[in-house]
Amino acid sequence: MPPYDLFISYRRLDAQHVRPLADRLRGLGLKVWIDESEIEDFAAVTATITECLAQSKAVLAWYSSVYPLSRPCQWELTIAYLAAQHIGDPRRRVLIVNPETKPDHIALPEGSALPQRPGHG
Image 1 (cartoon, rainbow, N blue to C red):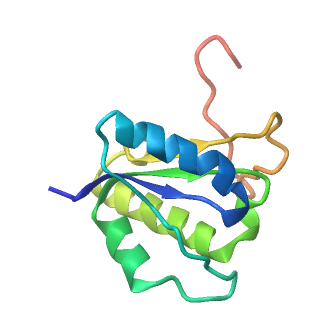
Image 2 (image 1 turned 90 degrees about the vertical axis):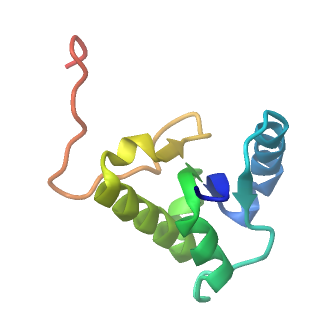
């Protein structure tokens, strides 16, 4: 069994919002891993982060307006998605939280579309 229930991927600029969430989830009994070190945009993702990501049941990406500007964050999200896809449905293991009031910073790959929910399209 993985040692973590949840790996939280976020930008350091969002720490003041993400840390209280992690603390609250821990208070509810979840094993949460959150990186406390500074990762520069062009720095290699550390072995610790890679290992913790691999040993987590799920990943929560705090997809703020600054999140997509970080190569390490994009790497974490991509690896989590591909690993979850290999196991089954990525929507069960990769959680995306948009803390912004609008989704302007979220772009879908060219040629893709979100599936429509019944009665909403």
